[in-house]
Length: 339
Image 1: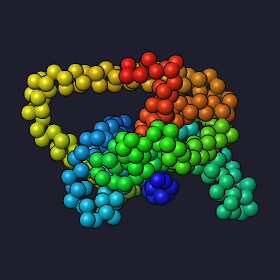
Image 2: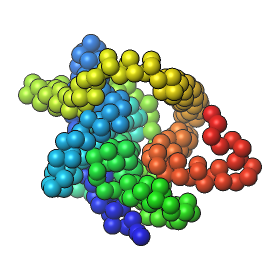
Image 3: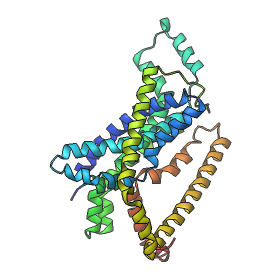
Image 4: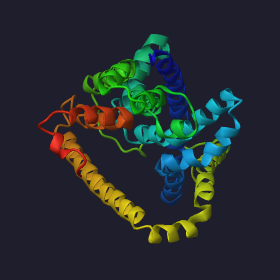
């Protein structure tokens, strides 16, 4: 058994999703940065809703419709790709909005003046873009690609064959853990190569802090209307429709939780894990940001915060398998199945 073919298709799909997310995120960033505070808050809320909607809820809501497309695998793949793109575009927007700008607008103007006749060659323009706004675009592309490449939950519920679903099926089918990890090596190689590329991009490019709204430019009315329409479609498809489908029997489900003590206990345990995890993530992010501020003059200051993001970027399935392998060691085995 090999996952090379599935990894290849996931690679192509991830590249397409990441490229489209960066383009859409650029439009959303321009809208938010050029809007008044109240309108910007509304835009952020609408834009982040698909990302914050539980992925299992989305996958479950569209699983029946996906089942009706069982004879049309191309359409089912297109539906899955569109849902992942709508969900991950806010990640690109966040990266583009908050990423530091290495080159000031004044420096760009001086560079244009230094060229003969104020014109730039193609290679000069590409090099300047890579050292400037291209770095933020590269980080946004990498983050979206890694999340799309390692996506598992929605693909499993919608019956999409990806390397993550194939690996999970092999693992629960009785394949040895070591063999499962060896099967995942091509996927790990793709993810590691991109992570190392982004780390190099962050380590060897100077950066300066900036206000995300300082370089804002007004969008044309037609462009603003188009971006708002896209945000509306995204929240409708990625949040409202799944919520309506899943919560149609909410009252009956709430009564069932009260009747089944075991389910109520599981919900409480999940809430406790979520609170502890969110608190730990908040503290870790605060420590990382303080480290960046103290080491603002060091070009490698952003490497540590990005490295802290790697476990979340490679996908829950691989992290779970690696942790499962770690817990096979006798020293940590007693901690298994404990909070």
